[in-house]
Image 1 (cartoon, rainbow, N blue to C red):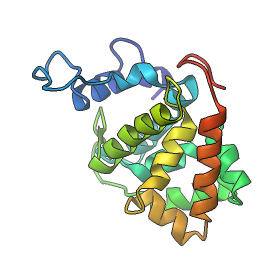
Image 2: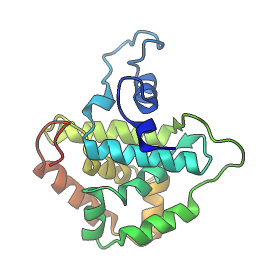
Image 3: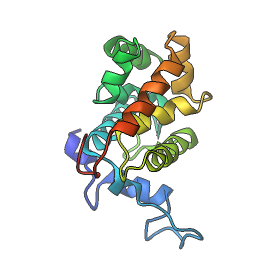
Image 4: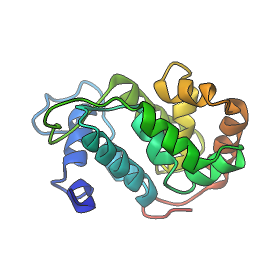
Length: 188
């Protein structure tokens, strides 16, 4: 499956997925509150992170994209990869370890993986973190920070089990989020 099949154009699966889950799809009922079209707020690097996570979920045959898929993808995309390294993690070794523990399902993979509740919360938290840092986009640093913010996610538990200094990594992601600026098309 090519990366283009996970693009973020008007009719791509991830835009449709985000729109459905965050209430901006024409097929969904009119929202009681104003919803944010999250796909438009993602930087190119964040789009790449989500595309990689979705592709990994499809390759594993899972029907849902979870926080571990997001963390695995974060090891591949800057600036999240660099933040992991600055916190003392080896991104390649971490990606390998995550890949070992990712759930695999037998059978035909879903054509369009859904988001687990934890993954939805992570993306909503990433949006809130981006707003709190005064920027108009969601970068990989916001997604990585959101993964760390909820210690009950599989991604946070995995990082803890691997001996990663969560507090140091969280501090680095917050610092990166504060120092970044720009718009969704920018990556820095």
